[in-house]
Image (cartoon, one colour):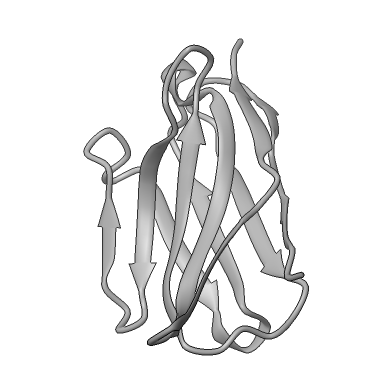
Length: 119
């Protein structure tokens, strides 16, 4: 079973920065999209950023201009650079990787990493 291992969360002051990383335990093929989601207490999990196989990126309006998603293709690792953090960015952040081919699709989730923005 493939596992996604996340790191980089923690406590940061407002206007600070963090970089999240998510690596797969095995090499993945035919990746279609690599994404970061977040879930704040009492809220549903929401999409933060997506990087699709062609290189295009999409961001939630609340993080545009502050967060950047990127990947290391050789290591099947996805990153989320978070700048100008705000208290409302506080949440558990999850990475997600989707891929595969017809009738052999896959989707994996990380275990989550806590990000707390507070002074």
